[in-house]
Amino acid sequence: MSESGVVIVGGGMVGVTLALLMAKAAPTLPVTLLEAARLPPALAPGAMPSYTPSFDARNTALSRRSIEAFKDLGVWPQLAPHATPIHQIHVSDKGHFGMARLNAAEEYVDSFGYVVENAWLGAVLLAALRQCPSVTLIDGVQVTEVTSTGEMAQVRYRPAAQMSSSMAAASDPSSASINAPMSASDDITLTTPLLIAADGAQSQSRAWLGVDVRSQPYGQTAIVTACETSLPHAQVAFERFTADGPIALLPLPDQPDAIDAAQPGCRRSLVWALSDAEAARVQALDDAGFMQALQQAFGRRAGRFRRVGQRHAYPLALMVASQQVQGRAVILGNAAHSLHPVAGQGYNLCVRDALVLSAQLAEAHQQGKDLGDAGDLATYAAAREQDQSQIIRFSDSLVRGFSTAQPLVSWLRNVGLVGFDVLPGAKPALARYAMGLSHV
Ligand SMILES: Cc1cc2nc3c(=O)[nH]c(=O)nc-3n(C[C@H](O)[C@H](O)[C@H](O)COP(=O)(O)OP(=O)(O)OC[C@H]3O[C@@H](n4cnc5c(N)ncnc54)[C@H](O)[C@@H]3O)c2cc1C
Image (cartoon, rainbow, N blue to C red; front, top):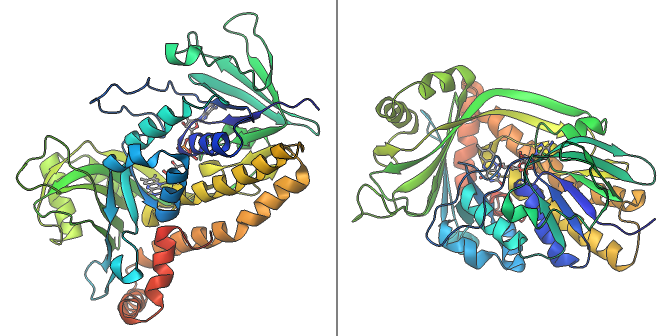
């Protein structure tokens, strides 16, 4: 079998992260990354990053383990100016007595993690990726078929009429064998010993590979926006549970147009999960009405909501692929497991998957082994099973346990929260989840 590189379908948060990790762990192993969206060119100094489907208006709470990975990749110095640390996590239950606090200092760490805007994460990671000679990034293309036979996996994609100029130079996927198209409208076929399907929760690659997915809609939609409050965030992350769904209010870096430049540190990221019907109702409100509804649901712990940005809606479901390895393909990222954002764990879990996978592939490459060796891929899947199932269960039970108004359940969870605040050992255990250190 001729040595060719790895092909990743999907240049979202996880595909890009894996490509970077592979470039670092195995700089001589070619990687081709195919992304449907046109990716923005390198950011001009002082410019704000634009959105792509994955690096969009959301903000991501990065665990300490993810930040360690970014430090190892050498991208943290570029990301840190756009990230805000979390020094305290404050958990409460609307209308009930229970409340718990986690303090970073009590866990002997300087922070639980950092919050970063996805658009900045994209700008920094993509800039780093463009510096990796082993990675060929092809954007603005639609993958139209993925197959995996015994000997090889194949990916067919359709190029857009014209590739972005920044990417045109990178459009020679010397990393994988390629059948050149006769015309721009012809599909191109890449042959690879290992295909990574990282094309998101609605992954077509997963379907083409014949992998089933278990999908359980939560009946909730997350409304995501940035907002400004009258009180500074003081690096506190709030998680407030209501019968309709959880509200996460996380600290964000300031922007130059803050309402009150004399009082910095009031910008926050909001992820407000509501029943689908309630979400549609509050989305239809004007900004003043929306802030009033939010104030009522969240209370006064952050002071008054004084400004809110553009709102974006994300329907929420738990999705888990029935298998993460199929022939010469690995299903990764949201294509493998897509979680409720309540605990800010989805991407962090994917980073840990990508860390293990990239290390394993680097070793196989170094030893001249077949990258798609069935035994090795099974070893990867087995190595990730425990961390994944714990985090999936943890996130899911938080949503289900707190999204009920049943008096007994609500009393129990409040007793739980109080107990959690005073019980020795409970906080460090949860803190390790929050920091992404539960398993690696
Ligand atoms: C509201 C919200 C808040 C969140 N907050 C956090 C948080 O604080 N912390 C955390 O750890 N996680 C968080 N997450 C989870 C995190 O966003 C996801 O885990 C992450 O986006 C998964 O990235 P991905 O690359 O797997 O998938 P996606 O982001 O869906 O990216 C898939 C990529 O594949 C491309 N693609 C799709 N089809 C094709 C095709 N046929 N051909 C080529 N390309 C294709 C798409 O254009 C896209 O770029 C949050 C999620 C939500 C919804």
